[in-house]
Amino acid sequence: MSRWPGNAKKEHTTFGGLSRAQLMSRVRSKGNESTEMRLASLLRKAGLHGWRRNRPLPGNPDFVWACKKLVLFVDGCFWHGHRCGKNITPKTNAKEWRRKINGNLARDRRVTRLLRHRGWHVLRIWECQLAKRPDVCIIRIRRVLAAT
Image: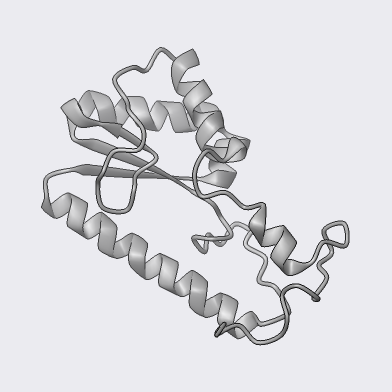
């Protein structure tokens, strides 16, 4: 039985009249074009090599430089609770959404701690930063790669 109150198949959103269930089914955790695929393209364009994807590490990092022991997460602002203005809390079931996002934040902290404990460098880039200032994101990645 679902923990979410209401009926996701009948509740309509402001996104083209899609139901909540239809809208959420379109959100991908892997291969997201606005984050992961965009950064992969930027990394190639910047000549940053040696990264791999889909490595079996805690938290499923988006990019891994195994030889440098660097993992990179590209976090979506909504799902990971970034307070940039893009993290708009839904009005329907707001309490449940806040619980879900807080759980994601706690998991992110646990994963970061665990990876650092295992000797990995952890870098997190926000979706909004990647969209607004991709050049700054590439500079951050270069700086961390050079320091490791």
